View 1 (cartoon, helix red, strand yellow):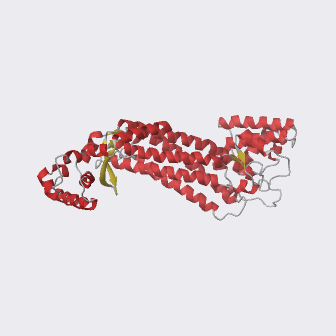
View 2: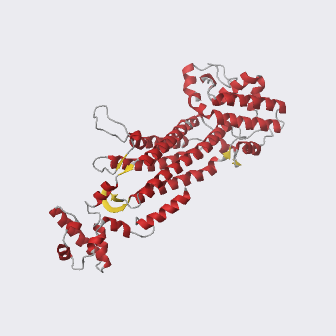
Length: 456
């Protein structure tokens, strides 16, 4: 096959080599961004008298026709043109004639592809941020309905202390709020135009980089042309933010998987987010939660892959950087799909309030309440801790719980225990009394809910 831009070569490549080096199979996803960047560039060429204004307008009109065809899905791409840039240039020349070859004046594929990627991520990060807010809204709705739903809180996956289920849901709300903030902050690094940096050194043509940046909606331009074409920090940052966000989703997915099991039985998922078994008729598997938990691996892998590609690259552009796109595209699609699925899953899940409350009445998660009770009566906490630990052991031996012990037996352990201890040991009362700022007390959760609503 004849090489693109092959005037310097005396030998053509074999087809399989061309196929290995081509990126059109995936970078066609940048088609609209590439056309958008080309329209801004050719308008600048005409405005700056680098090419005649009538030719600039003719090329821009041809590009608008290609855009219409792209939006209608009518463009046919060829591996022989390597990538989206050369494919579109050939289509343009076929559309309007040889004048289309003037489009590439004063630019390189190096600044062209970087511009496309900045434009693409500007759009997609805003979409992801919108989906984060929708998931936060779903969490808020569940929290608002379950402020006084008492739920076993865990550490080490062991029952620890009773909490409000709303408090548990809001923990994920605040994780996602930090995720949103990271994506929002990253826009400052995405919203920069590399167009006009050319291959690496700028160009001798009197281009106007600030005009093209304005046409494309960028807030600034790269100050250094070598940095402009070699920078992929903005992609790494996007992948990093995505990896952390999907890690948060994976943690919640793991909890949902546990909660839907018979062993926990705290929630039930809507049928739309579960599947059956090919052999066991009774099964209702939380497959969407499991799939998102699994997809966290590919998003984290895309981040590691990108860092590995970049780590040994000298300035400026290297063919290795063709590997910067598939992971970015895959992460965008995975993040948007995962967030949409999760929003629906949380919005439609059924919370089993009675089962949750029953669970906290059949464990020792109120043991800390008794230790705090004794400490409030002047007993050093370490002594109180030991007293309660021995009472827990007694309960285990007698196959009962702290609330089952009669007052006289509690007083044998410590004479300062009084009748009011049974109120203190109530799981609902334990939650209600934890009223420190940011705590799980019902009143504090309501304050937290109002703050969360304001952010949404």
